[in-house]
Amino acid sequence: MAITEQQVQDALRKLVDPNTRKDFVSTKSARNMRVDGDKVSVEILLGYPAKSQLGPIREQVTKALKAIPGIGAVNVDAQMKIVSHAVQRGVKLVPSIKNIIAVASGKGGVGKSTVAVNLALALAAEGASVGVLDADIYGPSQPTMLGIRGRPESRDGKSLEPMEGHGVQAMSIGFLIDLETPMVWRGPMVTQALEQLLNETKWREVDYLVVDLPPGTGDIQLTLAQRVPVTGAIIVTTPQDIALMDARKGLKMFEKVGIPILGIVENMSTHVCSKCGHEEHIFGEGGGERMGKDYNVELLGALPLDIHIREQADSGKPTVVADPDGRVSQTYKQIARRVAVMIAEKAQDHTAAFPKIVVQNT
Image 1 (cartoon, rainbow, N blue to C red):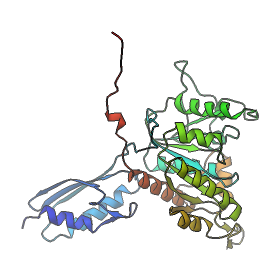
Image 2 (tube, rainbow, N blue to C red; image 1 turned 180 degrees about the vertical axis):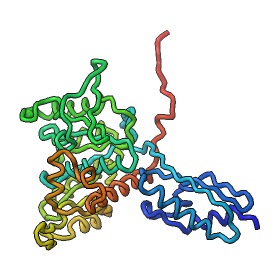
Image 3 (tube, rainbow, N blue to C red; image 1 turned 180 degrees about the horizontal axis):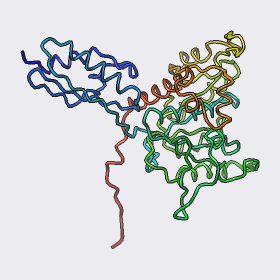
Image 4 (cartoon, rainbow, N blue to C red; image 1 turned 120 degrees about the vertical axis):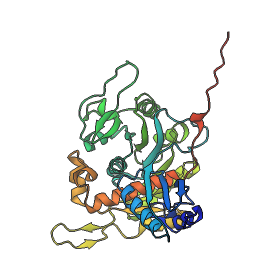
């Protein structure tokens, strides 16, 4: 008995991608469906980096199709393709960068830079081409966290080659100055430095550029909102009421300037004693979840206060690299996949497809 395309579609509609939480037909992930007698082939195209997910998804789809009565050979090809998505109005995309993710916090000391670097490494581990821009001009920490030393080269005398650590491209003011030199700069100099670091670095076809912002809602954040094409922002907080108060201000600022909030990451959520294993909420409990409900924003994940996270970041080998199969790394990877899925669901940016019009006097 010949299999119909409708039967194949019905089977795929019942399958839910654990990452998008939607079926493969409604997300248009199922492509190039071919039915030849009792043979079926289908392509599953994911819009997010999913190196670790391709095998399980291929098995999931194959198993569902093989359950169709009378089915013969089944061929499932699972792939991923990351494209540029829409940014705030009136801001052009940066060449060679598809999507920019801002990682922000209302106040300092909540572990934002650690989250940013592990998010970048998690996206890279899932097969994406990733860059990190350290936008904290006064307190750059990414060179230390990525274990990168030295100064960037300039092959053409105009632009800088990005540095690289653990397969991730990086640029920071920390590469250009002595780490002990304080940046005694006023706001306009700082914002100009940010724009130069972004636009005068020769990024190599980056799928996601993770921007590690300084804490607060000042000059850097406003420059980012007005001149940098941001796909979405992540707010990092701790469960503590004081941190949440400031995190709410950061969230509202991004809303005001038209940058979508991709979600909240609750850092230092619980503390597990390294001696006895006792777990307690030393900074309070459920703050990130309450904030998410108040603003209708997703809580992307909760990370523990763990001495190993701090030690690994300080040593230049963050958790996702130092302990890739550990529980904390798995949480970072889940957060990274969820962020990428939310970006994939946004409207695509097609400006690169339009020709540039140049007016010349002849």
